[in-house]
Image (tube, rainbow, N blue to C red; front, side, top):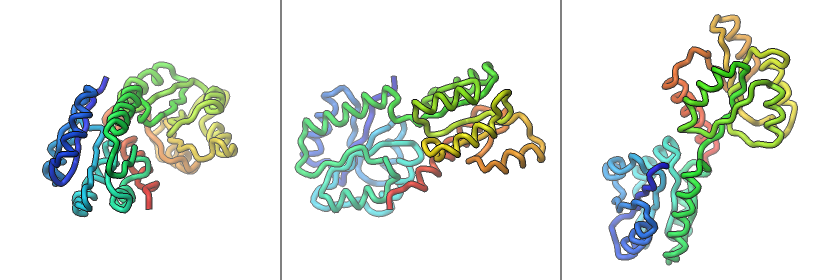
Length: 258
C-alpha cells in the first residue's frame, strides 16, 4: 500500500491551517505545512500524491509557483484540493490539467468535511482508482505476462490474447489506452483497429501497436494505419514506461482546462 502523504500549501501557517493539518493527521495520514515557494514545494514533492492549496484573504501564490505546480501535478499525476474564495480557486484550477482538482472548498471550510474528503481520496488512491488503465492485446502469453509485470505498479493492466477477446472486453469495460499486437492470427491488429474505429463507443480510444518487425517497410505499414504510436517488442522496461508517461502527459496537456 502506498504512503498516505500530502502537503498543505499556504502563504503562512495560520491558525486555520494548523487546525486542518491536525484533522488530517488525526486520520492517520501524513500532512506537512509547506510555504508556497518553488524551493520548498520541490523539497516536499517526493512521495506526495495529494496537495491542498489554501488561499486566505486573497493571498495568491505568484505565477511562477502556480506554473511550477501545474507542471508537476501533471507530470506526477498529483491530485489537488483547493480552499479559498471562488475567484481565487478558479484562477488556480484554470491553470491545472483537466481532472487534477479533486475537490474545491469555499471558506470557511467545514473541518470534518475536509478531513473526510482527504480520507476518501487516499482510500481511492490505495485501490488504484486514479491509475490510468491499459489493455494489452497479444497472442503470446509470455509477452503478455512480461508487459503486465512491467506496468502493474504504475497502471491498471488488463490482458487478452486475441483481437476478438479485445472487442468483447471493450464492450463491457473502459480503458485509457490499448497496446495492440500488430501480427496476430485470425484477427490481426489492423483488423482490430478498423473495428474499433468503426464503432462510436471505441472510436476515440488511443491505440498503440506492438510490433516485432523493425525494418523500415514494416514500420511504415504500421504508421500508415495512423495509431497514436507504436513500440517495437524489443523495447526495454524503462523506455516503455518513459514513453507511456510522455503519452499520458501530452494527452493531459491537450485536455487542459482553458
